[in-house]
Image (tube, rainbow, N blue to C red; front, side, top):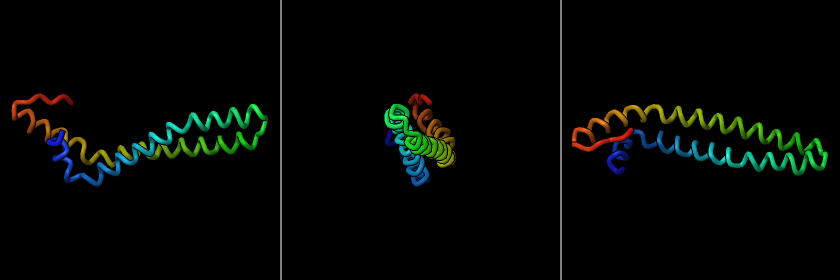
Length: 101
C-alpha cells in the first residue's frame, strides 16, 4: 500500500481534494433520508405545506450538491488514476508480484 501511495506524490493535492469531495457527497447522501422523514413527519402528517416546501427545497439542493461533488471528485481523480495504475502495474509486476486492479 505504501508503494502505491508513493506513486501519488505528484498528485497529492488532487487526491486529497477528490477524497474530501467524495466525503461531502457521502455525507449529503446519508442525510437525505432525514430530510425525507422531516417532510413526512412534520409536513405531510401535520398538513403543513410550508414545511414540505422547505424540506423539499433542502432535499433538492442537497441532491444537486451531491451531484456536483460527485462530478468534481471524478474530475480531480482523472489526472492521477490512469497514470498511477499503469505505472504501478509495470513496477509491481516487474518485481514478480501480482497486482489486482
